[in-house]
Image (tube, rainbow, N blue to C red; front, side):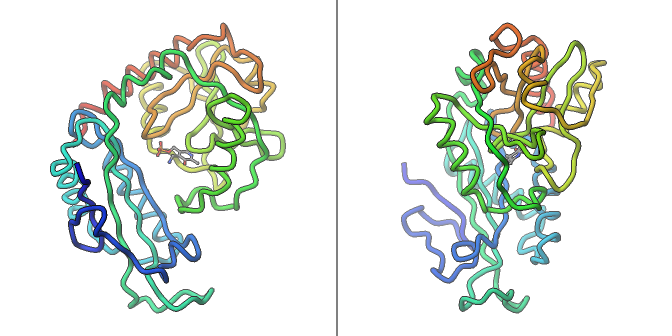
Length: 285
Ligand code: PMP
């Protein structure tokens, strides 16, 4: 089936959708994005993603080319016409097309807005959630505003390739000796009944799944400590896991070749995954 995508107000077959070669998203990575998961045909944590999009746009002095209500409508329409039961909706907004110049074009430049779906049957039952994933550590060489969800994803892509080359699934990035986050997820360790994850700052993306998972963890009487941790501390922890909109809560069983805990997905990660899936389905739209 040819996907229907959304480009600047139009629903089009994917092979007819085009944007300008002068688009600043293409030339300068001058764009922001969001990824919202779909389970059972419904959007998970839509509100959180819409709010973070607004924040990313504000931080970069970009306009808001679409209202939250219309954005929800476009998401839903794409899920409907593409018959997405489980999958993702990708959204990207750029500063638009203008003759190449480092300075931003005038604010009257029409922005580019693109959305498309990706079908992922069985997204919530991925085999990796049962086995856990293996990560390597790499230096965090990204820019200093990781709290803005920009499309500058080359370094995370390089990290993912380094992980694959090492026979692993992902990379945790390390700065000044402490873990920042995974290439496309937030990182956690568990010691006893305490969940430890780096505090929010410009150093990491403020994960929408992170916010929900920490809320559910506190509600379930688990202790949450928001502070940096090292790779050595993680290797010696009882459990480790990552969170993101596309993987929910994913256990990590190996870090730089060392098994974490028993080397199997831990009970806290498993429980948080169950709670997250159950609770976020209740508010899915
Ligand atoms: N950190 C980074 C660097 C990411 O790319 C992502 C996924 N977009 C996350 C964390 C997790 O954020 P979310 O839970 O909002 O998907």
